Length: 507
Image 1: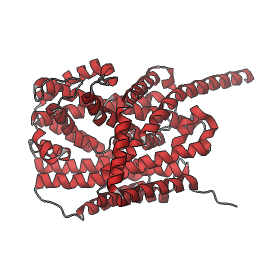
Image 2: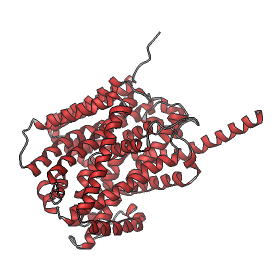
Image 3: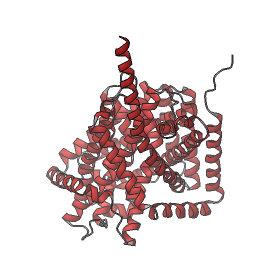
């Protein structure tokens, strides 16, 4: 008897070749690669700005349709499927996997950045109370409904077809309602290769960048510079932790890290809220939430008209974010789909769209509000955005303890994302809901090794940009997927109704 293959050799082989070629390109011809990648990315974000904005806006609209209509009653699974995780652990894992450590760094940094350099949508004088409100509103927009709708709208078709149609647990399965059984053939494999490249590029570079940001944070607060090899020690330690976590499985290591990280997140939020300028937080957040809701439609479709300055700003901020979220969506949605079995569509949309948006608004309102109130703009200009969180915490009591907690929080968010990426990568190549622990461990080690190599060559941000560039073809796929999702759910619902009527007639 032939033993069933544990992975698809075409998907794995082509992905490996592409990844190796890109890493070699970054090592041998770094300047050429940087020029080419940046040129492609600039064209992608400026020439197609209108379509990026329209795509993400339509995804938000689609998510709300699923949330408030009868679609929401449909289950991601068979009628007798039950959730595997408690509500808290489920949300902790999905939130941590999707948000990574970016929320810790950008929480105080982005509002402060927009405070000292006003976004073109609002304009006006910088470093004023109005600029503070507009800065917070812009940050809410970048980390709110639009970002989470991207993940939510990919999670639904992926989870639904895998749990109700028995399709392989691969990114390509999300397009079953678009191209049918062809997802099992060549084009399905191409989609999975694209997803693997985006995931490895995004997470490997994040591994290296987190290590560099750890070093920068320690240098800013403690005043000492780590030796060059310390970066690799940090990468090695982080890689060992998330590799062990994914090796032990979702119900042990991954769940434990997610739970601990969520409690740390809640703890830091309430500490800063209570011991910081509380009234300032409340006033600024309330006002900015109102402006965010009132301006959401216009901000979602704002291209700046013929203004070149506005277009450049959009490419560096809003469209960069939309591309980043879309590039991360294959592995994030894959991971969320895996842990959402037995949930209804309404539950899942609520947990992937509404709750994270609220969490981000609260976090930015408090941590970002603290950054504005304590004016960390000078620190950002001198030491970079990675130092903003430490500059903010030094104005609060128990700073030494807070810095340690912040470092653990950064590590925790990153580890949860890395866990999700390793699980998703194992599924991309195997197509199985329950993947081999050795396959998960392989991808965990691979992410760390590639991250270390890129850190050594100084190519982290270039490869990161390259991985984000994969979002361009994904954007068109998402539009097709949006249409296919509703068509597929309608057909499934119709088939279920007809099957029920047949059973009643037989009875």
